[in-house]
Image (cartoon, rainbow, N blue to C red; front, side, top):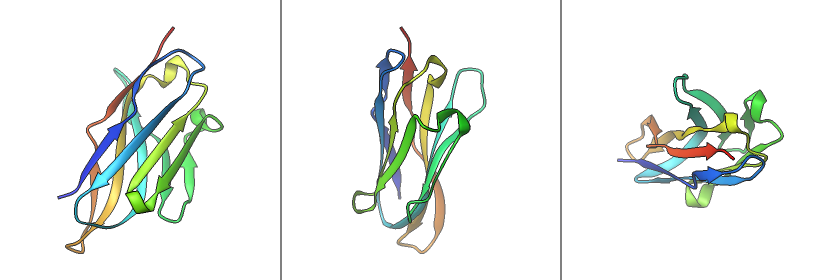
Length: 120
């Protein structure tokens, strides 16, 4: 069984920064891709950023230049550095990953989410 656990959320003022972490544990062979999604109240879940095992990254237009996704393959951990936060970044942030497990299967997993609130 694989688990993803996010951490680092909280309440900050506009313009401040947060760093989210997503740690994967279990019988993991590799993690080909990891993504951060977010869901604001009353809105659909949306893709924020993604990173491949080789380090290729992609970002939603609204966060380009402010958010940076990175990964530590040795620790099976992915980070999301969020700078210049805006009230519209307020949401529950979810980690999502494609994981190749010891059973040889590639399966998608989700973390439980972490709340990010940007408010003055």
